[in-house]
Amino acid sequence: MTPKKFAYFAPASLKEAIQLLRENEDAKVLAGGQSLIALMKLRLAAPAALVDITKTGDLLSYIREGKNDNLEVGALTTHDTLERSKIINKKFPILSDAASKIGDQQIRNRGTIGGSCCHADPAADLPTALTALEPEFAVRGVKGKRVIPQSEFFVDTFTTSIAKDEILTEIRIPHTPPKSGSAYIKHSRREGDFAIVGVGAVVTVGPKGVCRDVRVSLGAVAPTPIRAKSAERHLKGKTLDEGNIAEAAERANEEADPPSDMHGSRQYRLDMIRVFARRALNLALSRAR
Image (cartoon, rainbow, N blue to C red; front, side):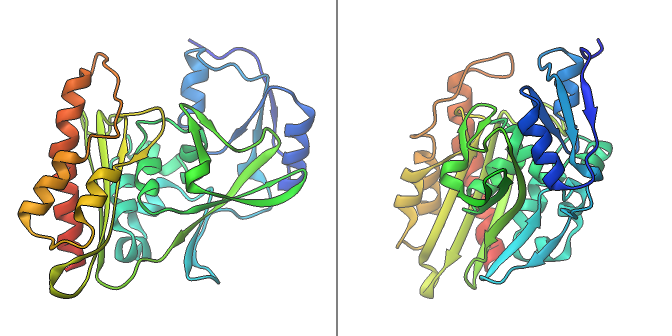
């Protein structure tokens, strides 16, 4: 199928792009286009206009150290750049794990971290991985700039708290303490498919192998990426041994509300959360050590 007719704008600046979003009632931002264009071809999405921000003079593709002990990632940074970045692989391997599992190489060359977050597919890899990192999302709109905490960014399936005339410009990821490790693992039918279950884990190890901090995120099991709070509570303050990790993994599905579909039943997804939470925690722990 082919998309319905739409207007196409290629503004020279973000300021112009924001104004176009305000003036066109049913306009969508075009970044990598790897999700939006596919939906338009299937006519599951039919925006009246596309505002292509890749042609603006504002450079939004970067990975750099921020001023407030965080890492700043531009919204137009591609999946391939995340996967190959030395600083990402060293400090946040959970993101390189997730980026490496998205589609195929052509998709990773074009798809962007900002586009994936704004699309807000609950089965997407990067939103799930980012949920375990607790980042902030910097946006720019007609009323100026603002910062949205991760806990308020994903609102529902395919829905974020970004206003119609706002554009995501940057993701700010707080650095983890020393002796921290992170990992993302997903279960899918084939390599590159959307997750049936995706699990992200961040672990910080204290003296004598005690868990100082832990975050476990789940994807494809609720309308938005969620945290496995029960698993986190079980591990904090305990020794990170195989028994405690196994028990935490058993509790990892308590906050989940997965659907049943052609890829797996609700119960199957609940079972797979336990399996992949254990694997993600063990991998994160091995990296922390």
